[in-house]
Every structure is written in C-alpha cells, then in structure tokens.
Image (cartoon, rainbow, N blue to C red):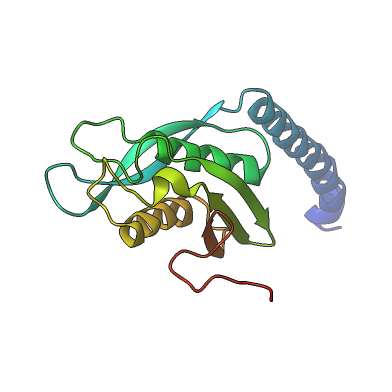
Length: 167
C-alpha cells in the first residue's frame, strides 16, 4: 500500500481547501462592506486654471463631494471651476457670475449650456473664450474618463457659429 493511499490526500485537500475558500469569500464580502460604509465623502480631483502671473494652465487639487450620479458629480466640478481657484497664484477661467444653465450627460456626451450675459464678456479673466473652453474641457476630461465628447452652448447656440433660424 502506498503512502498517499494510506493518508488519503484528496480527502485532506478537500477538507483544507473548502474552508479556506469560504474564509476568503467571507473576507472579501466584509472588505466590500467596510469600504461601502466608510467610503470617503470627498474625492480629490484636479481642476485646471490659468496662472495669474505665469502663462499656461496648471492643475489645482480640489476636494469635491463624491456622491450622486455621474451627471451630478460633473456638474459639481463645473460649478467649482466657475467659483474660481483657491490659490491666488491662479486666475479665473470664466468671469465672476457666469452661470451654468443646464448640464446633461447622455451616453458619454456631455452637454453644457451657459448664460451669455457674463460668459462672453470675460471681464476679470485673462483668457479668451476659446482658451477658457479648453481649460474647462481639460478639467472634465482629466477627472471623468467616461466623458467622450463635450458640447458647449451659450444661450442654446454653439458659440461663434451661424445661428439656426427657421423661416
């Protein structure tokens, strides 16, 4: 009689493996539960602003609440960009008082409509509209890879394009 038959290795392996797998699954379930219960309320994101002294656009870390739908999280980031930078070394992307009228996220396409009154004036910023648009898009694309395309309108019209008029 061989030693392996006398010891009955398959039976020993089965007795050791089944509890080990069950314990591993239990630990995974507990870990997911703890993560869900104590998930951080804020998410660290990077928002891009122009330099107030130096030229170019650089990132500024910002803690933004991490809750709600993807659309709500993107909307919060846009509102943070409209508020302006926290650092005095950075400038504003858009003029004070610029308002986001609506924001929709559908199948990876982000639609944003801004109020024209202050947006196109760009009074207290050193960026033109095209540069401000690029800074906004960079912040969104950097933080939200699920956004594949961004369409910005001002009062429902694409800026600097011929208006759509029905005869």
